[in-house]
Length: 74
Picture 1 (cartoon, rainbow, N blue to C red):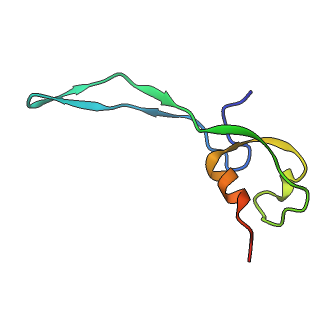
Picture 2: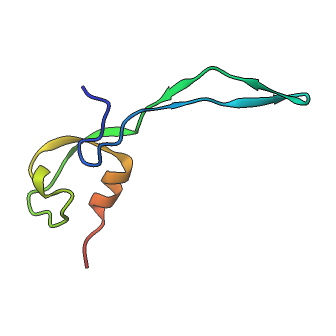
């Protein structure tokens, strides 16, 4: 299973932090952050242009794309 959104191509990123310790910054190790992916069924009659090529298929979609999918065009 790929760790990338099929719709918007969102993928993992490297993140590093810094902790303030007394008057100096202490670098912390890097961590890989992954997108919040879910298997989602895209409905057949979708009219939004980002989702039309995935209509009727199950895809890995990030939470942001799933939220957009729930909104209707006016």
